[in-house]
Amino acid sequence: MHEIALRQRAHRAFTDRPVDEDVIRAILTTATRAPSAENTQPWRFVVVRDAALRARIGDLTARAWSGGGRAWAQKSLPSGLFADVDAGATGGVAAAPVLVVVSADTTACVPAVLGPSIWPCVQNLLLAAIAEGLGSALTTLATAFGDELRTLLDLAPTIAPQAVVPLGYPAVELRPGRRRPIDDVTTWR
Ligand SMILES: Cc1cc2nc3c(=O)[nH]c(=O)nc-3n(C[C@H](O)[C@H](O)[C@H](O)COP(=O)(O)O)c2cc1C
Image 1 (cartoon, rainbow, N blue to C red):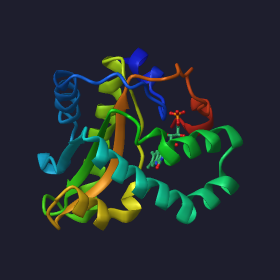
Image 2: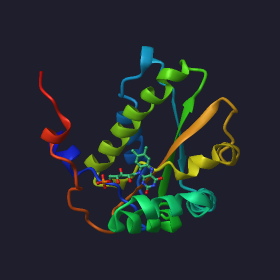
Image 3: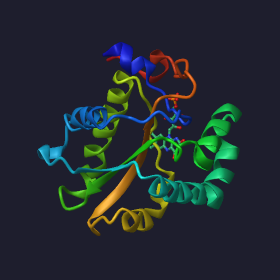
């Protein structure tokens, strides 16, 4: 378990190798073992394999990036991370063979616990991807156009897209990412 979590990285470049449906199902099953407030399980998934639809989601991502995300990130991100996110937002993420759009059923629980009931599920999804030898990333740029994403995926008005998670076999092997030492972020009482 630790070994898988320590290998988790944001992948933004993928090979064309398809991902078997059984593998996607196994990953989603693990995702749904996550905790949620009152066990309301507000997560909803759309598994996008259709190339045209992936390209449309890629367009939304690129629009969000060029429409403000890029300018902000250029100022705030270290250059290496900026280059990675830039490559992902301008085609790398959408080129993954699978995009899992994770949404929240806004009728399932009160707003205060809706997000907290989605992110553990997304984290499980990311870890399960690693366990299956896949790369993935938590991306949210496309959700800046949540209404358009909802329309594109034929989702009900009560379903709010939260993240677009690409899944695919990594084009490059990533070494462990940079994190602050735990003693910088922990106090003991
Ligand atoms: C709330 C949230 C939103 C994110 N949105 C994006 C995104 O839109 N595009 C992207 O490429 N990465 C996105 N990321 C991924 C982060 O850039 C990544 O987790 C962070 O840089 C650490 O990367 P590493 O695990 O590879 O070290 C997001 C992460 C989080 C937690």
